[in-house]
Image (cartoon, rainbow, N blue to C red; front, top):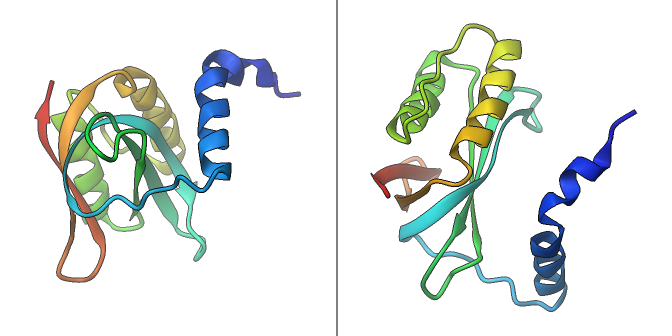
Length: 139
């Protein structure tokens, strides 16, 4: 049985986000540079049943403070695993891919290690029409 009380730590923040989402205050974040914090980092499965890293970034100041930027990277190819690893290393988290089951644990630990770090990102659309996130600076 899962102990869900572990998720109640940030309950006030979650309840505020639910309230804001319900009130229609959702803002789409335009492409640009933002100061953010990591709010999600996990290995999951895409709709096409491929391994995928989900990364969510919360904007921490400016007109879009509190809004989320979502980044999903399929990691069924070595190059994309490398991209994720390099992004996490830029944030100061030493990550290595050995297997997908190990990677899931590594990313879970990575989230715990990185969730309080503030950093700047460049949020763009690449030439193939996919979201691209680059770490600009770690504060």
